[in-house]
Length: 101
Image 1 (cartoon, rainbow, N blue to C red):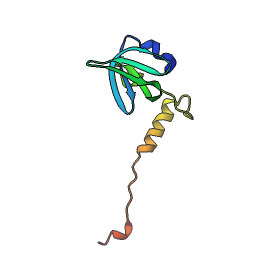
Image 2: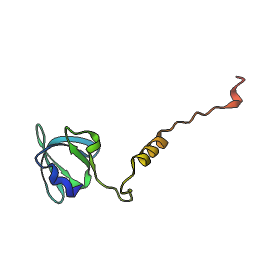
Image 3: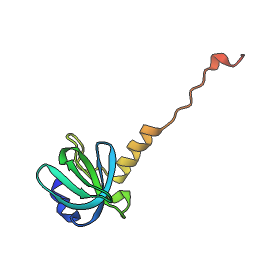
């Protein structure tokens, strides 16, 4: 992600850092810091805490994420869907002993 920041200079972006979404004009970045001009103030964010960014008007699917150590390079759409389905699959548990109560 750090290598691709220049693509977004001069654009309104949404940046996730510290679990917060910041919206502003990306005016620059150096080795350690990202600089946003927001509606009422300037925001400087340490790049190590920036987890993702995308152009403000673009869909979530275009969000650029920072790679995490040990993360697979790319999952196919089917693999990603299977993992998401498994994580949210609900199981119905019944207790046959309580049928008479």
